[in-house]
Image 1 (spheres, protein in one colour):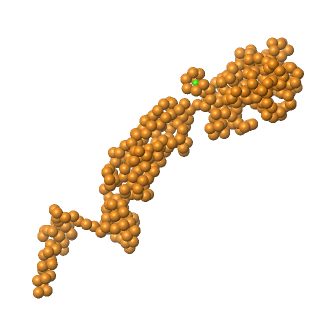
Image 2 (image 1 turned 30 degrees about the vertical axis):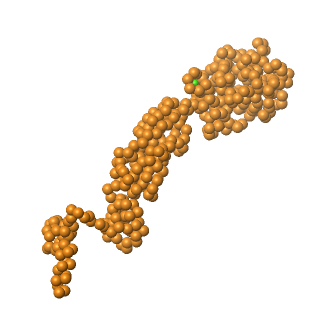
Image 3 (image 1 turned 135 degrees about the horizontal axis):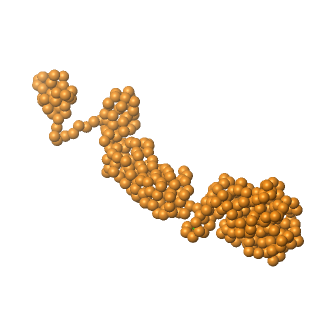
Length: 391
Ligand SMILES: [Ca+2]
């Protein structure tokens, strides 16, 4: 009776043993298998467990197989860790990892000709259904691109940050295709590139630039007058100063041939080391506010004056002295500095601009002394160099 019952159970279960092999649902296990589970109506169900239950398995054997109910996928033990989800890393649909195109955002300011910072990124959410690596990139448009790669650390929505690289070549609206490698999934995003050149050194300063040197400015914005290089002092007297005039007359021979030179000269060599440099004729464009704010500096003397005036010194003389609108910021040289004005047409004052003190024209500060003059005037003496900035 016991033998019969054992036979019946064995028959019901359709478990067959053949030469050390086991067949379930078959009397002839495949010769290559140690276990052959055969059915056309039912599946093979591996142990199902959560992440925590999986991780509680003591000393899992290499190759141990489970179904992860948290991730919804098959995993095996590699001998040192549990594998990523099998077979899902490159699939789409409900069980794969999916780009969420509605979440795309382009971040940072995009400016023509200005290299990216860490703020230039694209962010996009990926709905993560399984732990896997990813490589998400854009095409290259207008000289720049974005990319990100790594491993998903958590399930659910992961915000992925694509780092930008390159420098926009033109001010325009760019459309990028975001590609999720291995999945065929794409999204698109628009990035607007503005004309990156600031109007003057103060605008560069106000947007974070703090280094003295050459900057490209475009006072009238896109179109019109082309952008050009100039020297910016970003560290002295509040920074943001555009150099409009530099004169080094060490040998005494670097005087100005005529007043046209004084107004514009060596415009392609801006800097405090260029012996004769002037973009004086552009000060109307370069100044940032209604008044003309000047910084007059004599490096050899260590003298600086800093003031504003309401009239353009190139256009004439102030009606009074000190001039209307004159505001003393600091008076390192002397008091009652009357600002800069066009010098009168007087052979005794062979300079383009002069700064007055109390009485008209004497003593004075000179900008643009002509040939034959003894030197650059500065506070009752002469010096060999002068710098004039505006902002
Ligand atoms: Ca322009």
